Length: 301
Image (cartoon, rainbow, N blue to C red; front, top):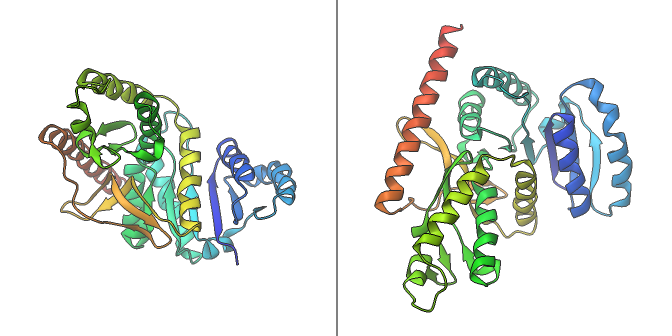
């Protein structure tokens, strides 16, 4: 029996992800959950096209499919400039619906502000923290990996890059980035290396600039890569957004094991002093935002 991947989002985004899945042809029962009933007929050409895939099927789902889901990928459901409080209110309704219909799979946030949505989905649902995560900085980490590989003239499999925090404000952990068995910073100390600290600064600035651009396609590719790894029983260590059950709790991207049972924390994140300060400042800002949203929810009752 093939695993079931549910996709929840607006037609434009969901159809783009489905096109990528058709090309990849993973062994999946892919079920799209339209935001509106008017969108359902628009998916018919993709449903028909999936007949050409030996392993992948696509169909339009109903509420009963939530209880069958291995993964539920939630794409951006809002229009531009939607207040975060509105997004959280919509999320509460979605979580209520999926839980009432027996959802017990992995809930994956693949859109913007996933550090906030991951946290509130965990608060609303009662599901385990291991079942709820967002793509976080993993798409940008992959982008940085391939850029480094090109710059250094090595294969991408030789690069282990680490980017933490949030997709909108990524923090490159150069101290946790490796070229083969050697830390990147040690590589810089090699007099023969055509790469120096200035190059790191420029690359960090470039990644920050990319973080402000539209990341949808990067996210679709990242979703497929993570699911592909799980299906092949080769789970990845990736900096996805995950719940940190500290006091107070928060969600942010840090390296965890992503596999068929969800995410699994491996060890504490160790950064350089400068990186740790930037990360701590970002976590403080996320916690403040969570507190503000929670207080607004309370006031609205």
